[in-house]
Image (cartoon, rainbow, N blue to C red; front, side, top):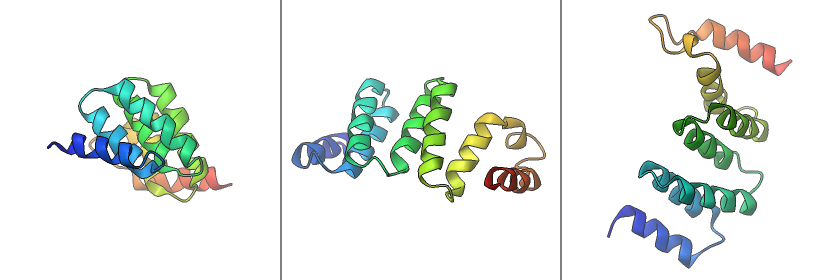
Length: 121
């Protein structure tokens, strides 16, 4: 039995478990079944609308599909739900400012510190 099959069975057994749906969405995205991933992300978001990890994973899935603007929208939604989450902020910054993350002098921690100060104002 594959991990995907196990997750599918968990969701069938407990359709209201948003964590299982999130895990299943992530697993579907890994195997390229994006439509299935989005379906379970939508369901997880309805079940737990205040949970930042749902739009965070959704944003990553969209970004992997080349949908940068839609991904940033979801990631910013995740940030708004959990404003102190450093991982979410850094993902947004890495997409918006790849030069601060993916060059010989990266990551630029001084820039990140300044960016955080600007955003917290």
